[in-house]
Length: 444
Image (cartoon, rainbow, N blue to C red; front, side, top):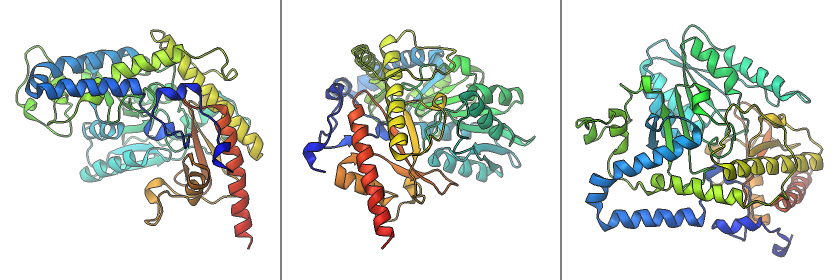
């Protein structure tokens, strides 16, 4: 297909620096930072470099607290329950290190967890003689099952692996490889009732799920990236720790602040505020990212994708009506795109709409699992050659991989305000032609 046939993105793509030569359908992997937020980060850097000593010694703590307050208002928790960190994998590792595991203990995970977080769970458990136990989630979910039935099946799959030795459960709010919104409201309370610590990897949730409330969720630890769906600069994330667990909670690395408590300030905040010299501008730009995405959402027209299935919403980000509109727009766009693809390919959806946020995975018919990105051969840029062909021949950036423990290959689409439904129609054409090419080559 000639280059001129590529579809245009949404008019809102102008807020980002996305290369117009590509059809970017993978916002979920690393996010994307709007130009206005990058400008705010540049301004913060300039302020830092104008007088670095004053910035780090006199100003940084107050600025970090401003960020904490902005994030806390967005995810519904107290501002002093948040540590500001670089990414959710660091948050998971930090939480697991502070769970006090001993020999014989079990860490419960599942086969849809992010590989880096599983690596840390195995490392930390193995060092102290604990073990990692993995639940297998139903996948694909039974055709025609309701959202409530799907939630029950997932919760049962996880809770059925709980034993008297289970001390910690690591669970994603939105799974990375499969894009499922897991029913934490069915999983966290029973675990807490058994005094099992819950470490939630919410990497994708803030800015995607309109009902996110850490207060209502009741987990022990919750970590998430702000650079994905809040669209802050890369390397900006948070770790929520319930107040009653903060006294002995320590970062992975201790700096001078571990020896110098500050009067009137919790040691939890003091130790996480400064862990060696780094560039804090990404963290400090999170409030601007929230404001920017709020404005982008408010600018959306009434001509949006159709109505999507509702999910339980104990808390809505009512203080951010523009962002609420944006999250619902993105979700409805990805559901519309998923319907388009599964109908064109003649394949069933792998999960009911109630379990989908702004990313969705779709099985690719007649294909063999391409493996995880970390398992790609050394001679390849990506795990699956189909992803390379889509990129090289069609200029489409979209992941192709498989869920661990399954043989079926899938593609995962993401939707942001920068995308248009025409881009997904183009993707369908590319996918159909490339799969036909695979079948033709295989038959020789």
